[in-house]
Length: 256
Image (cartoon, rainbow, N blue to C red; front, side, top):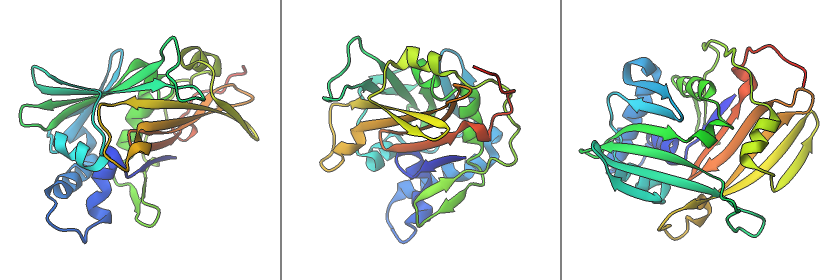
């Protein structure tokens, strides 16, 4: 199951549906139009994997100001680019005292906007792909088209029934830990071991009352028997994501 709770980008996508009583907010209209594009994914988007994973917007609608308006957070870097502007949100791993660990462990999310201020692509850095493999990110994004909207819980439950299963093997715990380092806590949940990490968004400004959005708790679940990564959930600058990779995986199970 893949759920995206409506904060940050997908908060933008769902905002018009959930808060339809609001008026005078043009970005709600842009948000809803983008959400509708997701049901015709290949017509409006495509993905690319190099050392990072990128979602490209063929017919961009959302503006840079929309992200700030609804996340109340600002990027670590805001630079000019050939296309327009490039924003980077850096998330740095912290210890139990909320201090950055040394040597530093970080990942980033990169948003590129054209000269009109419209988003044209959104990338995730290599470290992020260790906990969200690109094949599963692609499948998860595609499953948003026609997703069920739960207005009471304020979440979007994506439709994954029509997607082809992914043969790619799930990452092993040893490989994930070699990149993320030791967690703050390990919870025992029956057949699963849940590793808990915390990352802090490096941002020059946080609007008052939104300080919690900068703190990102990531829970990574491993199957005790196979040692495979089977689930990831986290809060990335207000974007709350939960992905159960077993829903998409058709890879043969291997003993550890």
